[in-house]
Length: 145
Image (cartoon, rainbow, N blue to C red; front, side, top):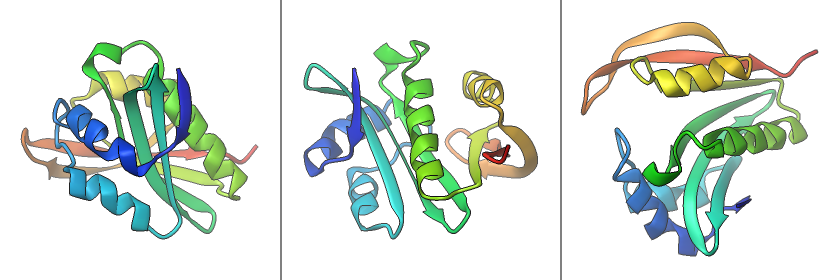
């Protein structure tokens, strides 16, 4: 498995992974990431197959993870952790001191991962997600020593 920047040819394969995730992004939304100012996008690949991806952006000393999705066959195998750790590296390399993200309150696997990596809950957005409806926990990680 390798982690590399997002390429145009990845969009349709990522869209297929998204369809197996809650609140999936369309191919158009994924492609729009190429236009995002200060955007950061990563793709995990294995033997010419896209296994997962993540994206976000940075602004000054803050960054935000907007999306992380892993192929159902690759979940709970460490791929999400690997993507997130590489994303954190990119943020630190750009001078970020804090990384923010939102996660479905019911997604105990993701919240467990984030908490194990030092993220702390700083807020909650009630009924933020739809299909299915769920609250969003707002998490933050500090890169300051």
